[in-house]
Image 1 (tube, rainbow, N blue to C red):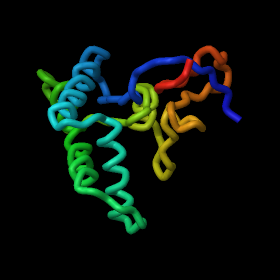
Image 2 (cartoon, rainbow, N blue to C red):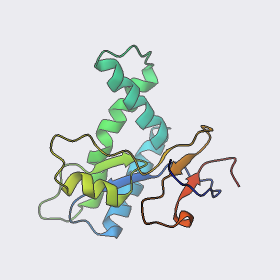
Image 3 (cartoon, one colour):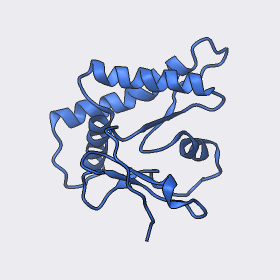
Length: 158
């Protein structure tokens, strides 16, 4: 069983952004560019990722009803890493063509996925997982962490 501590915050699920060699300021610029891109298309990162996930399942033959919005969101999710990379790598001699994005993934987790040796492995789960009540997201406590470092983000918790 995973130990968690609960805190209240109105923030949405974090969107992790990563490009190898980027500074924190460059990554923030890419993160902000992606969120602005989604806002320009009248949607959130959560909507886009959920729609892309549904569309992907549909394409591999899962019995999922997809909507026109799911298809639109899947297209936006495919474009978002390019938007982020352009913002992050502005002025670089050899810019990255795409950034790694992950809903619920931290920069450190994305860096491990991108830079680590994980050939043939399944990707690790996000840093944030749905809480049992479905109204928040749980950040697990890692072995050796104290319980105060985990948190739940979402509405309705105090």
